[in-house]
Amino acid sequence: MIGGRREHDAVREARDALVIVAAAAPVTAAVAVLIGLVWGDVADWAIWMIGSVVVAVLLLGTLGSALLLADRLGARFMGARPYAISRMRLVTIALVAGVALVGGLPATWPVVIGFGLVCAVLAGIVLLGALAGTH
Picture 1 (cartoon, rainbow, N blue to C red):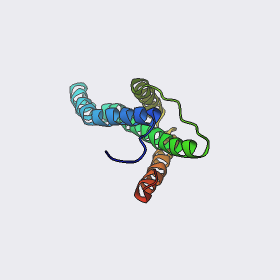
Picture 2: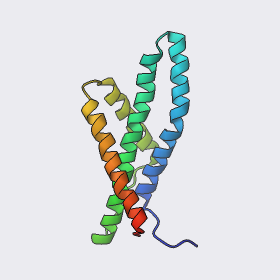
Picture 3: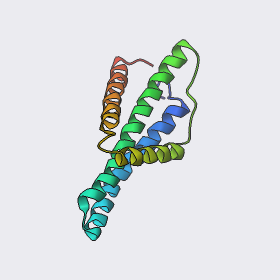
């Protein structure tokens, strides 16, 4: 048996939702190219379909990292845990938000870039915590 703490349900659901959306990205890209070839506008279909999935991945990456951080700090200092939402609901919310943000381009570029930066910072904090061996 491996020692250490298991993540809470909220973290697990967010991670699973992220894996589902990330795994769908190559299929979505292929479908976007095929539909684009049929309709004669590959770039437009790629922006809408692939862009929406990429933004959804950023949103779920940000959420998953933030929940992991909140789970660790909340359990340690306050005895609290984040509330879990089902992974399919998270996937739906992330994809709808991704379509909305891509639909608002170029005005929504600051939001998309912000999510990317926040996701990178939180992922870095989580990786540093993992390297430090904190449980």
